[in-house]
Length: 60
Image (cartoon, rainbow, N blue to C red; front, side, top):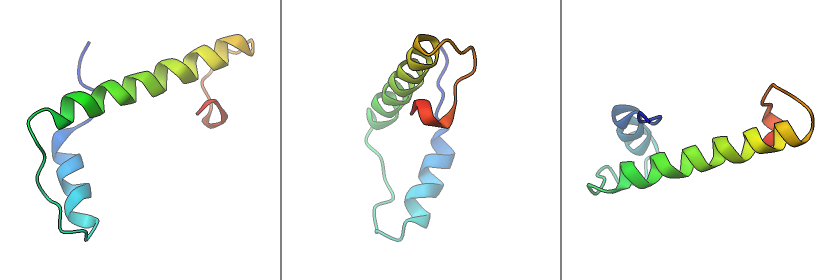
């Protein structure tokens, strides 16, 4: 599977947060991408269980 999360956008988000944290460890993006995939798969499962073929915000 390809990566879902774009590194440059995450870097921009970190900078825009104003928290002073602007660097990521080498494994951060891999773990973040896995978390996003888990969220998508969980939402997909919920939609299917509710008889829908469309994933909706309420599935999150």
